[in-house]
Length: 178
Image (cartoon, rainbow, N blue to C red; front, side, top):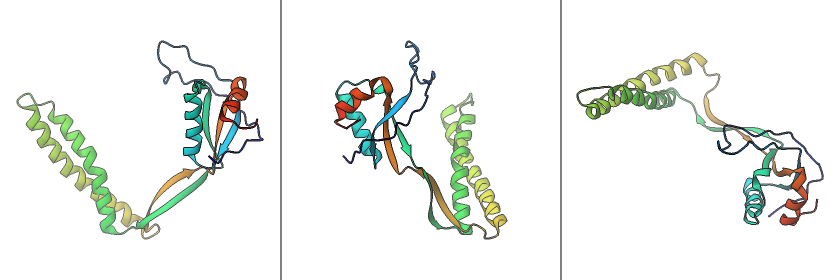
């Protein structure tokens, strides 16, 4: 584990999300938090929180925070008209099939056969419409963006943040200096 005690006392106010809390429990109100350790990978930070859980620490008072975010756009290949048509067809086929299947369920005579048949028709219709739209968008760009890519946010480090009231205990359990 490549852990380093954090010298900065980054604090954040955080309130419990009532939608995520079980209905029978009162929402937990979080106070200021303090970073007790910093890791270069998410897996290392996750292992630290898992260790706290194994030692019966109240992990609902812990957060893993990604710091120093970078926007990375990974180019996946050259965009051509056939590739734009294919991606558009895939994008349109799935919603088309789902919409066709849902309409098929409303058949009174034989909902299974009607559902499958309309899902097939929806898949074909969605693929055709998606391919047309994908091709139109590609041609409208006139070569300004002739590549496909995936965009992601990548943190440079991960800090294990703990409520100020129990931060010393968490640091002791992890064996890091405070």
